[in-house]
Length: 66
Image (cartoon, rainbow, N blue to C red; front, top):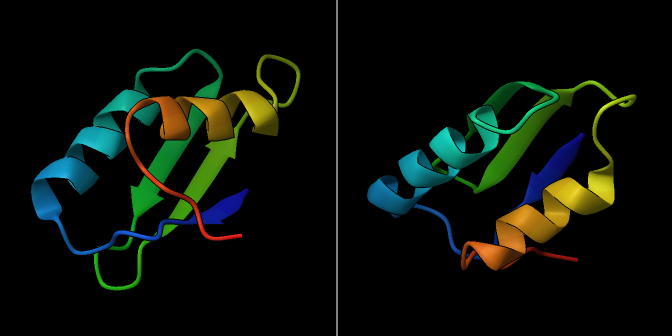
């Protein structure tokens, strides 16, 4: 799964997002590109939905590009 953040380049919050996502049950890997705000997420579809991942990102104050 790949999502794009509206706000990229803020290293502290980007690192926080990686930590939050990596700590979720079912997330195998989360990588954030600080240059363009692209977030690549590998997860177990049997444990977690894309909607839950998106909601977690939004609940932590990040905005997603449509």
